[in-house]
Image (cartoon, rainbow, N blue to C red; front, side):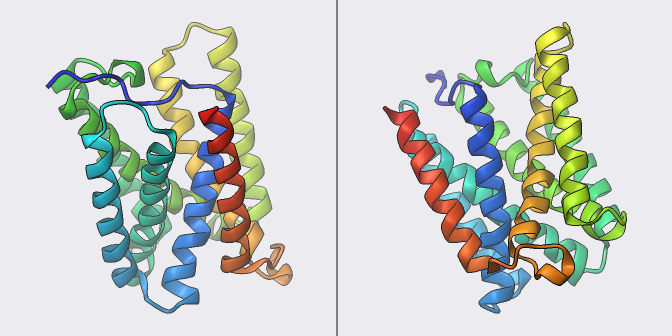
Length: 240
């Protein structure tokens, strides 16, 4: 079914909001599963239901609605946080194994999408089927990013700040390749899209964890409130 491209232009503002949304997804997911005590499984069910509800609204829309778009992004990020934690902690897979499995799943989604649609470019999403593939890839990539972020912060020995610095450095390289080389813009986009999620995960830990553990000790509720306000202001500015 042909449709208009309902996705925003890829600008610096897009990436700032993406990082903000993924960081908020980390803190909000932890707020539900740990601070409020719902647990990873229950939180995942609730947040997946929210994702499906927002996705249904997005698919039914006939044009880009920035507030709706970023609400769906936020729902994938929040659900991805609890899904990853359920896999890695409750099921006992561990961060490394979880990240490898999710990497394989993301590669499969992108491969099937490219086979069916002929491209995975963000500016070529003009059918309902391509849009569904797009949001499926985002949900998996945000779940993967949580596992990668937790692996860097906990298992690699880098800590929260070290993990954030490493991901920021890699993102800077991706940005440089996009600006000064002829590398595939599609591959660079998805690389950056995946990497901003573990950056958000580590930044979320920096904001919420106790100072004794290298964090700022804002708590999940405090950090989520601040990030939600920042994201809302950014979305409202883009809508003007």
